[in-house]
Length: 352
Image 1: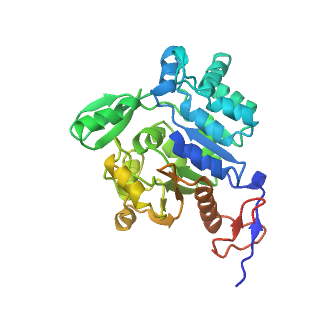
Image 2: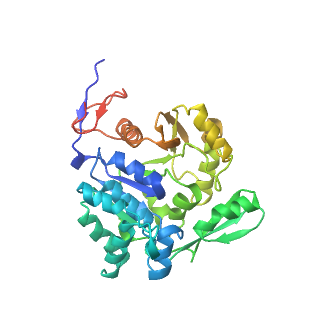
Image 3: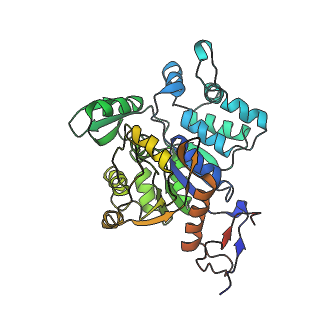
């Protein structure tokens, strides 16, 4: 049977709400914007380290770093502006600080609220879709370990876990139950597909689920709900974790059955690269399918990883393509066209 191909203009692409933070989320957004303009990135604001932490402490604003990363990924700007956004000062009191962070901080200073500042910066950068802080509340992240030890501050969790040498039992927001940004709840309600991750389990993804209204909005949605699992375990956070361990932690901090599909990587990891990760206590995340199925989650394995400068990363193009294919295979029906399941049946606008 011949494949009946169809192409969807980006303006009419699926509405996708992605939830998380860190570089993993930005990586995925770079790929997804090639398929759809209807993107909403819902981003954690629990970070308190690095340049973001400095601005948070000095100016009393939410941390801009993860928000800025997502806007850079979705920006449609001139090369000079992109270079400026990436620029980090190397000397003086601003050493290590990103121009992009300072740009957002300045906009925050002349805006009535942080989410308005983010919206204004998005306009300046001609961002595809929307970038939304999950909340505008001033929140901190607290981790409790299996031995009962606790630590407050996202940037301190890594070091405390190394010291305590045991797993994280749970994380909490301080203050508890901050209100979600209404626009974030609307984006989830309107989405055709909701994607959690990829990114740090306890410090980038779960904090979003602890914000009032987010889990309930996901539960109420009829969208396809997918968790994109990391490729490698993360030192100081998820050493020795399997895929089912990640899923179990997400459900424990939200609700069982929050999603029923998990996308994992099937691409091989070069031995030399794996060996270097092993020296740091990290390894490829083992996919224990039966344990995942026992949690009610279907595993989809696809080649979505690559190696860049010796580091294993999700490939933006491959990851986005697999997500769009999953949506097309399970949800899309356009003008009577039929998707027969062949992997080349969906092409991005202008693709060949």
